[in-house]
Amino acid sequence: MTEHLELGNWGERIAANFLSEKKWKILEKNLRLKRGEIDIVAMDGKELVVVEVRTRTLGRILPPEATVGPQKLRKLVRSGEEYVMKNNWQGPWRIDLVAITINNDNSWDIEHITDISVGEFRS
Amino acid sequence: MSLVGGITLKGINAYKVEVEVEVTGGLFSISIVGLPDAAVKEAKERVRASLRSLGIRVRGRVAVNLAPADVPKEGALLDLPIAVGLAEKLGSLLLREEALFLGELALDGRVRGVRGAVPAALLARELKVPLFVSSENVPEVALVEGVEAYAVNDLQELIAHLRGEGVLNRVTRMDPSELEVTAEPDFSDIKGQGAAKRALEIAAAGHHNVLLIGSPGSGKTMLARALRGVLPPLSDEELTEVMLVRSTVGLSFENSRNRPFRSVHHTSSAVAVCGGGTSLRPGEITLAHRGVLFLDEFTEFRRDLLESLRQPVEDGNIVVSRSTGSVSYPSRVLLVAACNPCPCGWKGDPLEPCRCSPTEVERYQKKMSGPILDRIDLYVSVPRLSSRELLGLEGQQGEKSSQIRKRVCNARKIQQERWSPWGYSCNAELPEKLLRKEISLKSDVRTFLQGIASSLRLSGRGLSRVMRVARTIADLEGCDNVAVPHVSEALAYRETGFLS
Ligand SMILES: [Zn+2]
Image 1 (cartoon, rainbow over the protein chains, first blue to last red):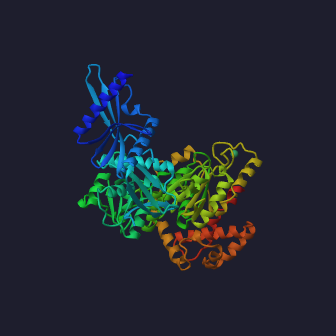
Image 2: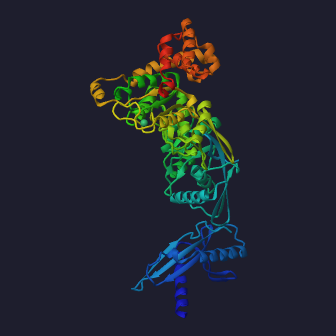
Image 3: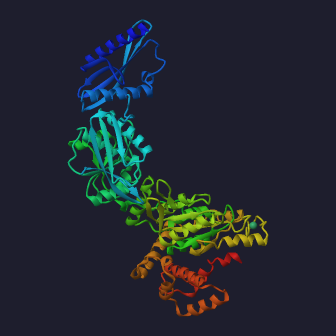
C-alpha cells in the first residue's frame, strides 16, 4: 500500500514537472476535496485544467484513457466543479490525463491526453 | 441576429436556419438546441474534430441554438454553419455579411456534399446572400442562375476565405445551351416493333399515358426506356425543376437534357413511390417529374398503391401529410405501365401456347381496368418477334430517336400554340369538355365518330379518349383538322382491342 502511494506521489511529481516544462502554471497538487481528489490543478494559458495522473508498471495492455472509466470521470467532473465553485473560476476548464508508464528497464514514458471528458458530461 | 445561416428542407424548398452560438466558462460541453438527440451527438463530434484538425480548440460551455426551433432539421446539412459559428465565437474569424453555409464535415475537416444544394442556392439568391457549399455540390449549384456561390473543399480554406484571404473559387454558371438529349437506348437499337414505336411516338407527342401489353421478353421495358429519348428535351425551366427534385434526395446532376426515367416495382412501399417517411423525402413519382414513370408488371400492383398514384398523376403534384404538417411535391409524369397479356404470359404469342383458361384470362383482364387505367390513353400491343422475323430485320436500321423527337417537338409546339389561351400545353392535359368543343373535326368525322360510337358501344369517356389521341395524330402530321384516318388509327389504341 505504501509502495503504491509512493509510486503515486512520484508520478504526480513527474507529471507536474512535465507540465511546468510546457509553461503551465501549477496551482494545486494532491488536492483533497469533499467530492473527491484531484492530482493536479494547473493553468494551460487561459484554461483551467484538472489533471488526473495515472502511474503504472504494467506495460501497455490498455490504452491510458481506458484506465479512467466513466464512473471515475464523473467523479473528476464533480471534484472539478467543486474546485471552480470554491475558487470562483468563471472561465473554461477541462480534464486532462497524464499517464506515466514505467518500462522494465526503469525508464518511463509520459502520455498526455487532453480533454478526456470530450464534452460528454454536462454540469 | 446571427450572420451565420444554414438550411432545412421542407418539400423541395429550403428554409433558412439561423445558427447562434454562445460560449461561456465551465467544463467543455456542446449542446445543440433544435436537432434530434441522435443527430446532435454526431454533429458535435464532426464539428469539434474538424475544428480541432485546424488547430482550433473548442473550450468552455458551448450552446448552439438553431432557430426556428419548431422546424425539423437534419444534422449533416448544418455541420458547416455550426462550425463557422463556433469558429467565429472563438475568434478565428469575423463575418462581415450574412451568408448561408451547407455541408457535412468529415473528422479531418473535409466538406462533403449533401442533399439540398439546389434549393439552398435558390434561397441564397432570394435572400441575396452568398452561399458556401461543398465542391461536390458545384455541378448542380452551377445550374442556378444569379446566385453568388463558393466551392469549399475543406473547413480550413473556408475559414481562411472568411478571414478575408479570398481563397475560394466562385461557382461559375454552367451554360445550359450546350446540353443535349443523350438518352439510351435509341429507338433505332430496337428491332422491329414498328407499331409499338409509332404508338410511343404518339404518346410522346400528346403526353398520353401508355399501357404496354406483351409476353415476357417482348421488349416492353426497353421500349419504355427508349421513350424518354423521343420526348422533347427539358427546357431550362424544367431542367431546374428536375435538378431541384434530384438535389433534395442527394442525386447528382446528369449533365444532359434527358427527361427522368424512374421505374417502380410492385413490391415498393407507398413511401418509396409517393414520398414521405421520417426524413420526408420525395418518392419515385416526384423523381420522375417531367419524365417517365414506369410501372412494370402492372397487374401485380396493390390496389391501394395504384389508388395513391391516381391523384398525383392527374394533378401533377402530390401532397404528403405528416405530423409536422403537409408537404407538396411536383409529380407531372408520363405514365408507362406494362403487363403480360394473360396470367401465364403467352396469350397471342407466335411460339409459346397460352395455358390459361378463359375464366383466368377474363379475371386477369379485369385487373387492367382498375384504378389509374382510366388515365391511360393508349393501349399498345408489344408482340414477341419470332427468330425468323428478327433475322429478316437484320441489317435494317430503324429511325433514330432524334428524328422522331423532331416530329414530337413540332407536334408539341402546335398544341402549345393552340391550347395556351386556356392555359394548357398538350392534348393529354385538356379537360374533356374543352377537348370536345375545340378539337376541330373535319365535317365527315363527326358522322364517322357517331357511327363507330354506337357500333363499338363506346362510352362517353372512351369516345373522348379516341378524339384526344386522334388530335395528337393529326398534330404529328401538322393537320389543322382531325380527319377520318386519324380517328381510325386512334381506335386501334383502345383497351377493347385487347380484351376481345
Ligand atoms: Zn396465358
